[in-house]
Length: 212
Image 1: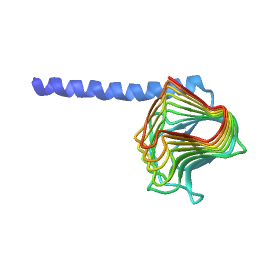
Image 2 (image 1 turned 180 degrees about the vertical axis):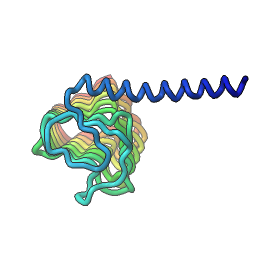
Image 3 (image 1 turned 120 degrees about the vertical axis):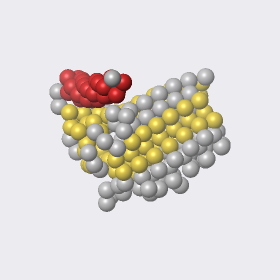
């Protein structure tokens, strides 16, 4: 009887897991009429809503795993991870792009985890860690927002900001082995964030604000 009960519970649990995955996929489809699922390294060249359906590893021949070359792109990692082999870039956002959102993704073990050259982009609810001889996030574009993200244990700077008007809030920037944040741009704002790194914050730009 006990074995029968256990078997029934396992069947119920498997059904619930299957339903959960189905509900999640259905919810994404309902929220966005056109969802493109990503199953491998890719260049995104059209606006739209993109969702990782699995973990990804490595890079394309161009040296990055995901390249974004379009505006009005939302990339949802859906809890998945990009894993490098100590070289290349996890996500590269081209200077030709704008209004790009990267969310719900972990990126680890690339030389640089995210490189952003465009403007008006957002990084939300991401974990950026263990870059190899590069920065966790390299920002040369303007008007970038980073919110509710963890940027930790990168082998160089956690963030390097040479652009202007970046806003960082409610984030954990800790344990990076260079500067936690290196800023040479201007008019950047950092607030409500934990910053505890080997060298703290290095600022050479002007009109940058750090609060709380």
